[in-house]
Image (cartoon, rainbow, N blue to C red):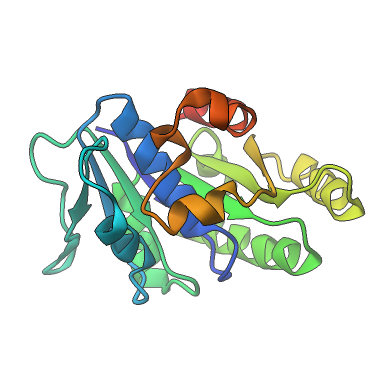
Length: 207
């Protein structure tokens, strides 16, 4: 059972957008999917409450347990964890112990680059070595406009990370509008969001 954690210590980078749409992708494939929300703001849980009936089901997961995170219930095939900004080291260690894959969303800004540099050092310490990042940790570019200088700078930074850039998601209002109604790209007819679905294909293959 794959457990995918969406992690970045910086707020506002698109963690919840990535987590909810990933859960939607798994559910649309027919997997029994759970979405856990470790953030005090509970944005993913709020999003679940907006989700219309009749769509591919996504279950909420009460992941907190005595002594750490619970194991997902029997029968669940796919789990997505939305994590908070400024995640504590102890909680990060619990997440890394549970997760099979870790997605690091980041936007094309210098503040995001600096925050990611610091966080990668923290990840290395938590995983006891940079080599343990490989094959398990992937970067997702969020809200990227390929025409901008910021996007070029992000591309250069990511090229030097030594980690796979598993997807680059464009800057579009589709995510904002869908989130407001408890929806994901994967709930719509493919022809309506074809360009965005294509950008998800390498991410889903990597997972």
